[in-house]
Image (cartoon, rainbow, N blue to C red; front, side):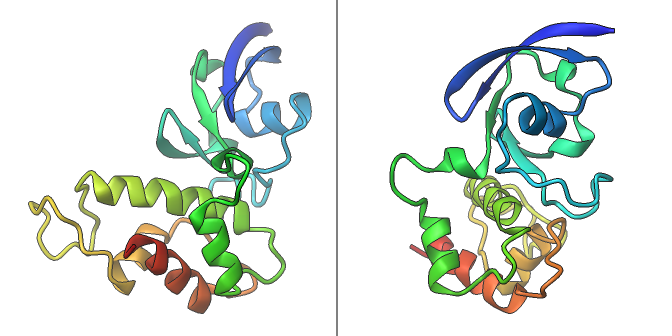
Amino acid sequence: MDLEIELRVDGTEHRLTVDTRTTLLDALREQLGNTSPKKGCDHGQCGACTLLLDGRRILGCLALAVAHQGADIVTAAGLTDGELHPLQRSFIAHDAFQCGYCTPGQIVSAAGMLQEAGAGWPSAVSKDPGATDVVLDDEEIAERMSGNLCRCAAYANIVPAIAEVAHR
């Protein structure tokens, strides 16, 4: 069964017809040609498909497109406004990628994580879950980014890249 939906992707409105079983990731990649989110495990385990959906992190491979009619979606490509996002610049400066496959998902997840921490959301390792100011030390960043895997093991550079942006 096909349904027509509207999505706002990286600031542009799109109207598309999708099978009700189509994931958001597949709609973006196959119908809109947006290859910024990557198809990694396709089971929600690696985070390569991380998107911001109405400002919150989601895994595009686990989200059905029809369930997000009218949603505002941001991919790694949509984080820019003509210049690289601070996280993108920091990942480059810290050599926080090797093959680059997980990088878009890592950067989108980091952007969402910084918003969550800025809003005072605690994590499993937060010292004081009731605190309004979240201290983004290496342990906190690693915990918050734990859903994004890197096959090349660039974690030693990813955490400092995110920390640099978090501490500005």
